[in-house]
Amino acid sequence: MSDEKVTSSLSRDDVVHVARLARLDLTEEEVELFTAQLRTVLDHAADVAALDLSHLEPSSHPIALENVLRADEPRPSLDRAEVLAAAPAVEDDRFRVPRIGGEAP
Amino acid sequence: MTTAVSLAGEVRTGARPARDVTDEALAAVRAGDDRFHTFLDVMEEGARAQADAVDAAVAAGRDPGPLAGVPVALKDNLCTRGFATTCGSRILEGWRPPYDATVVEALRRAGAVVLGKTNMDEFAMGSSTENSAFGPTRNPHCTEKVPGGSSGGSAAAVAAGFAPLGLGSDTGGSIRQPAALCGVVGMKPTYGRVSRYGLVAFASSLDQIGPFATTVEDAALLFDVIAGHDPMDSTSLPSTPEPTRPGLGEGVEGIRIGLCRDLVEGCAPDVAARVQEAADALAGAGAKVEEVSVPEFSYGLSAYYLIAPAEASSNLARYDGVRYGLRVDGDDVEAMNTATRTAGFGAEVKRRVMLGTYALSAGYYNAYYAQAQRVRTLVMRAFERAYESYDVLLGATAPTTAFDLGAKVDDPMAMYMNDVCTIPSNLSGHPAISVPFGTGDDGLPVGVQVLAPALGEALLFRVARAVETLAP
Image (cartoon, rainbow over all chains, first blue to last red; front, side, top):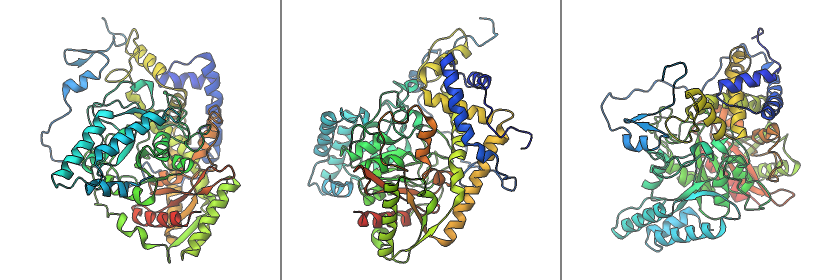
């Protein structure tokens, strides 16, 4: 991992970029605040980032997981009306959303 | 306060109607919860209906279940069909789940009465319950102090005497730390031992549901009810759990206990003193107690605060204003998604989602996320080594007693440090429990933590029972 940054150099622009990826709008004050706060967390993680652990496999889970299969038999699903009743907007038994970017209305 | 064991006993024999117990519990919450704000919503009708069903079973000579008539406080990230489940977030305000969590079904089958939904840090992200969008919960031992978190509502509801039992979820200590700060028992089972179907996901490789109670026996009773395989949760362990309650009183004679220096050293002197006294008392009761150091634990906090936010950033992508919860309109889908999430999430959730997105993004994945997963392997190996010499480990649950409301809200790193002693067991997926053991210099409760290897719940409860018996 020598080609990657191991000390926190999180910039203001990084925060703006990450917020956009996460679909969050930040005010100027929030960008300043979050940049400082996230830098502190990443600085704390710098000791971990600097460890040589190349001999260890990463663990994604605490237990050995195997794929679980069940018999392919039809069974009742959630009630459609109940599920759609929870949606902010519905049309013709479907979730209604605003225009998807770039498409003609 | 009456324990769940004795309460269920009275209800089962017909000596006390479940309906009376429920009405009293509901009245107590109505009269007293203004001071603590442990509940977000109380299920008056549902609780009475469940109590009546229990009384009908008793009257008809049917078995009403091991938790007959026992009120339970449910953390608000556990789905209750047709009843609001908010996760302490504006983004889920008013949402009514179309199904019950498996643990909720298990409670009802056991005759328990779900009293209501308890306050929590938004999406379980926090250690003080101050990150709830609906206002903080206060510690019943001192209302100027936090109850801990994120399951602070359930811990405080049990501590306040509103319910003998509670359920919470523990991703980095969110059951054990509030249990310690509120002076109750709180336990995190082995990863996969309790079904998470219907638990709103935070960090899927770490989350686990577990019990709160005023006694170790009550906690074991509740654990036995909720443990087991569930085909609806693909991470649920297939084996059938052994009941833990029968062996509770077997004592600690000959049990090898490692007093883990790394789970004490960074703690306040009064907390460290209680842990040492618990270790001495256990040795006096016949356990073989030795000091042990597991230096790898010191990397756990950093690894956790990369892994958990990374998983959260993915899990919380589902809150997009399309299928449920809040929607704030926008000109196109992306603008709607962004406006919804910006209005619906609080500051801590935004911080963690951004931290996780960053840790997973191109150029940083190996340095942060993959590296944190290697630390996870390191911590798991360290546990394995320790358990070659010891049956259980002993340490503090939280570094201090309950702190002042507002003291750490502006300093995320200071808040995260609360989890330093509890995180290793989440990374390894092992069970651990916090048991009250005396008080700090401020007179507030201290929790001692017992840690056991995977599926070691029976031994964990047995040692915890001994700690409880030996507590001052």
